[in-house]
Amino acid sequence: MNTQESRLTIHKLLKEYWGFDSFRPFQEEIILQVMAGKDALALMPTGGGKSLCYQVPALAADGLCLVISPLIALMKDQVQNLRKKNITAYSIYAGMSRKEVIHTFKTVIHSNCKFLYISPERLESSLFKEFLPGLNVKLVAVDEAHCISQWGYDFRPPYLRIASIREELPGVPVLALTASATPGVQEDICTKLGFKDHPVFRQSFERSNLSYSVFKVDSKINKILEILNKVPGSSIVYCKSRKRAREISELLRLQQVAADHYHAGLSQDDRSRKQEDWIHNKTRVIVCTNAFGMGIDKPDVRSVIHADAPDCLESYYQEAGRAGRDGKTAYAVLLHDERDMVELGSLTERRFPPIEEIRKVYQSVANYLQVPAGGGASQYYDFDIADFLRKFKLNSYLVIYSLKALEQEDWLSFNEQVFFPSTIQFTTGKDYLHAFEKDQPGSVPLVKTLLRIYEGIFDQPTFISEAVIANMIKKSITETRDQLIILQRAGVIDYRPKKENAQLQFLRSRVRTEELSINRVAYQQRKEKAGERTRQMIQYMNEKHQCRSLFIGAYFGDLALKACGICDHCLRLKAAEMTAPEFEQLSHRILDRIREEPLPARDLVSMLGGIKKEKAWKVIEFLQAENKVDIDPGGWVRRK
Ligand code: ADP
Ligand code: MG
Image 1 (tube, rainbow, N blue to C red):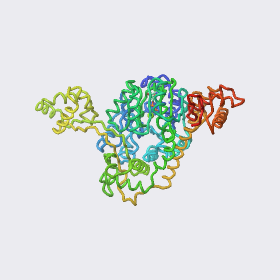
Image 2: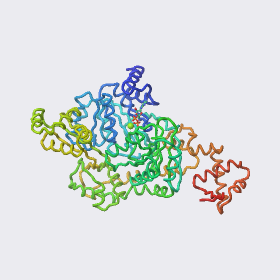
Image 3: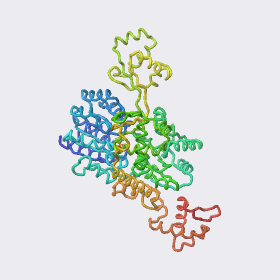
Image 4: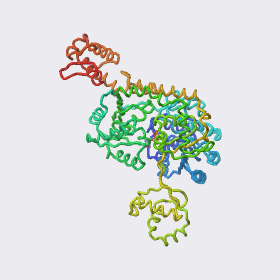
């Protein structure tokens, strides 16, 4: 195919499968690059349309597209969405049994499967190596590609194995995709994946309808209420802990705001319901931890408020970016108080515990899970972290961050948000089933329902929903479960109730404490990089006059941005008809005047010779809004 033909083909596919008329910036360039057999790194904000960049070229050619993705929940979404378009897709992820993995590989090989989603830990397995040559892979897509960089904010060692897949697949192009990578990380991705030149396609980081602002406040809840009053419409409030999410949501409800809370500690059912209610505007404000938002595509979010600052701009940009996808004005507001700054400042120390402590946590975990010395390699364990903390009386931060360090050193992999829906497979032939139904007439409605609504349930474990079945057979969910268990005991079905336990996998066999090797140099370097990211976050919060968009753009290496004109700094200058340096100078003079004692506002303004009164008033107002000065009811201005 020449370029012109390729263009026609991909536009046709875009229309046929997605119903879209045109590509977004860079989608077409990236797709054509991949179709020409070349590698590429695509940098696009979340929601920018990265998936299309590998899905379209995969559909345009024969063969399979292997998609490497660390987020199980998103993987399942993608597979479902493709299947809705009648495109065959499968996924293989952490926690699936060996039997299930083999079954999936075989199905992929013997069907016209176009997409196989796989989590990175699975790449190493002997099964993968065994089946890879038979898969007819024509394109490799690496989602969340920043995970391959040790210096990125979300390093995952299994990603490093992607490089070795390349050797098995000579000539197959690799498309790496990420929403946020600093120039250093972009470079690292290209190197690690063996890209020849620097094939980076970067969508602009500009969000021209998104107004960024930062407020230092005494009462976050008051400020949140104020923002919600000023900005009607759907909103997300991000908090640093589950407890805070619940508390803030309760406070908002007390003020008649339709708010709800969301975090990874809730059951899957609760989470889905809360998410749906918010998406359909039954809940106006979702107060949540950073567990919320993955894969959510709600266009009309009018504000994203951070009640607590994230630890880096990568996260902030992604979370804030969920506002205003529809292109209409939206607000990204970051709130902080004195304590937050101090906490952020000491975060890196806490996140990188001493190596000796990490060793102790490793031993405790191994003891808790009763992993024998020399055993446990590639085994999955249900890991109830709360129970573990209680039994071993360990500090939760220490444990979480030690696990993270152990993950990054490739000792284990810990996934807090794994959810396995219930599955059923019939284990009998149709003849036996008839005999069984005759014998147990009470089971007939249930069996009939299963067969009617779940296609393929005879051939493979099939995801089912007890709630849906209960509804169809007009029984309660508990009764339905009991009946399923009866069928299971009778040998009619293999029923695996859903599991939501966190999963911990030992990647290597258990060793003695002194044999647990941790690369001190790399650990130290990761710590320094993390410290640098947090410092940049603090600087963003402290920044006094630079346009917020420019600041974020520069951080990601996008220097082509123009001042946005709508962030707090741009607006402040516009309103005051002042330049940034002029504003700085005037606010210094004002603060200087009241250094010793408060002054009546009028006197203060007239003391600033050579300055237009309106300008002085504006600056005083802004200082008040920034909580730097206080104006009492008598009109006296004092420093805070
Ligand atoms: P990302 O992976 O970059 O976060 P997705 O691939 O999930 O984003 O796409 C986000 C949304 O944008 C999806 O709903 C998708 O259908 C939509 N989208 C992608 N490309 C286009 C396009 N060219 N025109 C219109 N909508 C698009
Ligand atoms: Mg995506």
